[in-house]
Structure formats: C-alpha cells, structure tokens
Length: 288
Length: 336
Image (tube, rainbow over all chains, first blue to last red):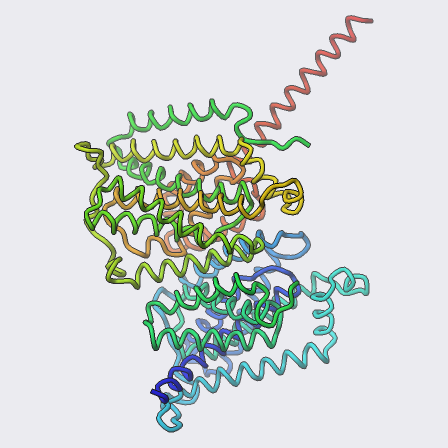
C-alpha cells in the first residue's frame, strides 16, 4: 500500500511540475496586465506539437527542434497580443478573457489543420527505461520536467531580482501609474510579459510532451489545470504557482489512482470551485 | 441619462412580426430540408436567451453554460427512461437543474467577473466529465438512445412539425417573459447591479440575491432547452454538452447581442446558419469561429441585434430632430 502511494505521488509529480509552469505564465500575464490568459494552455500545445512535428516528421535533432518550437510559440503569442489584446485600448478583464477564449479556438483550429486530429507523442529524452527506487518506478522524463520547473523558477527569480526589464515588469505589476510616471512603457512591458509567458508555456510543452500525448484540443484543459494551480497559490504569486501546480498534479494523481480516471477532472475542477469559494485569493495570496 | 431599455418602443410589434415570420416558415418550408434546422434554432434560442439574460442583465459571463443544458437533457432523459412521463420529466429536470445551479451560484456569484467566468468553465468541465463517467446512470460516453417523445395525454409530439410548434411556443413564452422581466423592477435592479455593484447596493438592492436569481433563471432556461432537445432528437451523448457547446452558445449570445432578449433569437438563428456559411472552409471552421468570437467581443459589444437597434434608434432620433428644426423654422417664418 505504501509503495502504491509513492508510485501514485511520483506519477502526479511530473504533471504537477507542468501545471506549475503553466501557472507561472498565468501569473506573469495577470500580474502585469490584470487579465486571465486562457491561451496559456495553447502555448503548451503549440510548443509540444511543433517539437514533435520537427523531430518525428522532419527528423530534426531534439535540441534545435525545441528551440524552434519555443521561438515559434513566442511569435504566435506576440502576434496574438499585438492584434487583439494590445493595451493601447483598455479592455475590461471579462472582455480580455473572452478574447483569449476566442483565441483558444483560433489556435486550436490552426493546429488541427497543420498537425491533424490524432494525439501525437514524443519519446522520452533519456530513454524509456524508468528509474527505480525500491519498488517505485519513475519515468526519466519526470526528472526533466521537474528540473525544468526548478531552472525556470530560479531563472525567473534572477530575472526579476537583477535585470532592469524584470524590475520594470515588477513595477508595472505593483503600480501601473507609478511605473508610467518613471518612464516605463506599459505597452512594451505588457508585450514582453506576454512573450515571456508564451516562452514558459512552450518550454513546458516541450518537456512534458513525452509524459502525456499532445492533442490539438488539449490546451484548454492544460490552461485550466494551470489556472487552478495559480489560484491555489494566489494569482500573481510565483512561489504560490509552483506549490499550487504540484498540489494540483498530486491531487489529480490521487483521484486517478483511488477513485477513477474518469472522475479526475471532476475532482480537480470541483476542488477549484471549492477553493474559489473558500479562498478566492489563494492559499498564499493577499486579499487584493 | 435615461437608460435605454428594450421593450419601451415597438418591441411588442417586433414580437408579433417574429410570430408571423415563424408561422410563415412553418407554412412555406415544412417539407424543406432546412426545416429541421429551424427546430434546432428554437432549442438554441431558449438556452441562448438564458445566457443573454445573464450577460445582459447582471453582466455575468458563463463559459460553462452547456453544463446546464446537459444536466437538463440528461435529467429528463434518465427520468423518462425510468418510467416518468416525459412532460413531468422535463418539468422535474428543469427544477432539478435550477436547484443545482442555485446551490452552485450562492457562493460562486460572489466572485468578481472574470473569476466567475472561470468558475463556470470549471463547472462545465466537471459536468461533462460526470456525464461521461457515471456509467450506471448516464450510460457513459455512448449516450442514451430511444428517449420517449413528449406526450400530452394521447397527443404525442413526434416529428419535426409538431416539435417545431412545441419548441417555438416554449421559446416565445420564454422570450415574452424575458422582455417583461427586463422592464420590471427586478430587471432594472439587475441592470443597476451590472452598471455599478456598489452603487446598486447603496440603493438598497441585494446584489447577491439578484445575481443568484438571474443565474438560476438562466440555468433553468438552459435545462429546458436541453430537455426539449433530448425528447426531440431522442438520443443524447455527453460530447454534445462539452465545453465546445458552451463556446457556441456564448458565441451566439455575443453575436446576437446581449442588450436585448431578441438578440438570443438572432444569435440562435445565426448559430444554425453559420455552419452552412462556413461549410466551404471545412477544416478552417474552428479557426473562423474563434476569429468571429474575438471580433465580436472586441468590435461589436452590442451584438447584431443591439447594433441594429442602436442604428434604428439613431435614425429615429435624427428624424425627430429634423422634424423639430423644420417646425421651428416654420414658426420663425410665420412670426417674421
């Protein structure tokens, strides 16, 4: 029973790290631009699909394929932001959310045409043989995903702490008017934040592709899991997003292992509903 | 500034024009292959009307409205499978769904706008996964076949013509109710909540109560449309009520316009016509839907019905102003 539990928890860890990455992107855009970007899940899907297409169909090596996938996703995000959400016009948060909801279907529609309707998958980066500790088998890809989460978190911390752009972004999140007064261009910052979120999403898509097969219509589900994670930790809180993602992944794994895989969505989204009611600002969030 | 409300001008006339149009379609196109689309349009009109009330009255957005349509359809289908007469099953399904919606709404409507929208999206996914996962009751992903048609005593509502009359009668009844509700004290209170929650509360409006009531009403309409759908098509499967269905309903509500209940009828008809228009695009359909959705949210906040109404009002005001200046000129001409 005990090793059973650890097996379940390990299974949840990989997905949880992926959700945490999505939640980080969610929080970034929300803290600077104050809207919820449902497209965050599409970034994951685009990153994953482009990598798979380049490596499996075009027979590229994994590394350049991943780099191109991340750049492509970043361009997609930038175009979408420029064409629709660009803060030159002030959108109500509900309207912005609607626009990203429509964007999900635009990206999904294009992905369906380019990559087909069948779910695709990528072989694990370091071989299919799992790593075993005692009775617990861990897919090697789990280490990749968790490692990526750790590196991304540290990189973000350094970026916000030590780079001028990062500090400017924090200033925009803290006080948009004040930031503008000291000469920070909000439009540029909103755009850079959006691109950064797209990059993080794409990276999550690339490393998580071998864990879960990638399908053109999986973005909304990924976005919602990431959103649950972001809400759990408090929107805009970066440590919160990481903890939230892991909790959601583990919760889902426990629900799959002990209730039924068909009800795993019901359990996690039900948990989101309960959480939104009890603590709409998240476990670590401040009541803003 | 006086708040422009639908139904204050010639909305009654519009209502009778609509009835005449529907009767004309019935007489002229009963045998046509497009006729079944018009039956579906009636079903859509009811659920879209629920969304239009939610968005138009209290300014709440639901990304998971398909959940209530699905609950209504399944509750009615499951009840009638277990021997409940279909009419009673429809009524019970609506009551049941409204009860569920109220329970969910009581805490959820307290969330701010975009968080509510995501809460409803989550609800939509929960319901979809329960509908396909709860095999013993819903028969799983393959769906429920052979649902009994609605019958009033010996009169069985079967076939397109009979369903057309029943469904559009229900839709018109809901529309009439919505038009009256919009003009009622309650409607005005809800519009005040949409405009400014704090000001509405300061005026003595119980904001949460108003929001919960509108949410429950919109869920009830969704359930009614779902139940009528189940007994009309006699077969339902969970994928009909998935998040894509919610997306289409919201698209119809935004496209038709949420400023007036007529927007729901316009949106529903557009939703039915749209697949035929975009049919040549085949695989690009999803993308085009998304583009339309974005364009409407950004550039057409009033929707088609609202925009037409606005321009009609604009023209009427311009004519009135022209008449006034002409009168004044005549008066001045007489005095000099």
